[in-house]
Image 1 (spheres, rainbow, N blue to C red):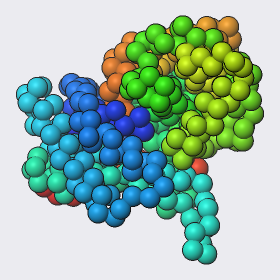
Image 2 (cartoon, one colour):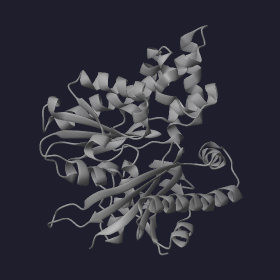
Image 3 (cartoon, rainbow, N blue to C red):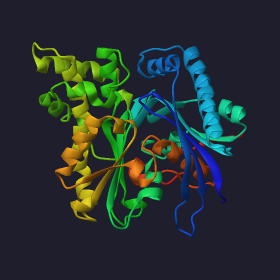
Length: 397
């Protein structure tokens, strides 16, 4: 094993664009240690509007042609290659290895019967051969299937990075990513990898963004400005939190299959009914924002508080938040107030040395480095897999 410059590429369920993290990853100092990761630089790039529209169509459409899916797969490969090339130019460094998560268009982490066989399935788009050829670099892609094949949910995979970079001997940490979906990793103080708890909490920005698109023809609620003018319909939030996903025990994962367009239509209808004659759009957005915050707090109260509390008192728990949701000031204030009431300190990922938007891209740089060195990338207690497995498929440039 040796030190390498690796580019991690991430495009999340919100489908707003691509994050590239250029990292230097080195072997552990000692046997039994974890890899050392240094972020050289991060670049975020929005999807072209036509590409984003095609991605959202592929995620939520009841039917889409095979030709469109094939073309989108290759077009995304070009988008990812261009993003890495721009990042390399900006930071003056060439990555020998690229870890590309791809764009998830379908994820079914739990077994369902299909053609007479119970099975799991996942699909991330972005043709690795295109990336490898354009960058003349080795590409590791398609990380989730290996975990699914081993009986896991294929998610979350970020806990490997959380454990390598952010575990602490003195404080318990809950690392929350607020992308399209909210997901967290809970690491009790002094815990080993088997002591982690990780799962998807439910919607992150996904429902808020969808409501903004439908009601205001905007991509997102900048800073929570629209939600601030509305009234939270608490009975709607409480009713949704009674639905099966939120009480299901970890490990668990979710996506647009649970909280996409069908859910958003039902959610808006529930808000209209609860709001009575006023029928105010801002109340819908305020309630969507409150739902995200409440689902995170509910997950902490139900599953995480006792888990980290076994290793340290609640006053020594830090809640570290990353992802696009950190830009929503109202959402962050809701989380800070509710978690603060339980004695939990809320911090931004930036305070630990990684920009909030870069974290998941850094994670896939690490997973690519692990694959290149033949090392497992999943943490079974987080995904539910039967064993640790090497993740990703290699395409040589």
